[in-house]
Image (tube, rainbow, N blue to C red; front, side, top):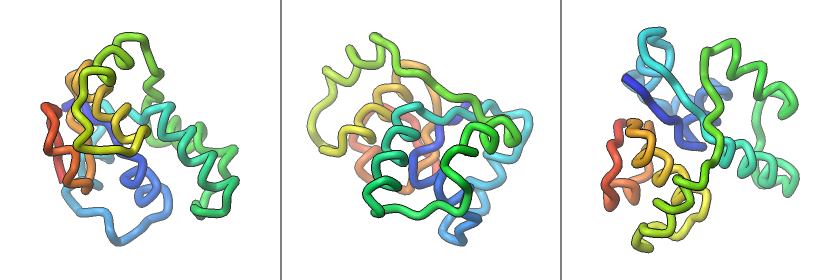
Length: 127
């Protein structure tokens, strides 16, 4: 299975937060699954950490190391993702989440998210 971690999923995973379901943890840790994390999510985390709106246990500069250690690939933003983003209805107004949804659709990934707004779109989700 190819999965894309929503921003909150990654934060909860990196922080060891109990809010993360056992099913999602198992999907992330299963080495047979290919896990992706959007560069858009890293951008979102950087902004929120800088504004003191988010605390992560790991040093922000170590996020890439954490991804490497946990076999999570960074998903870049492509023009095709932006074209798909441009087609999306505004069920969800968060620009970072909308980009993650577009990436999930284009790349045919299952998005690991608790965000119910994702289900308004034609993207596979799991929680």
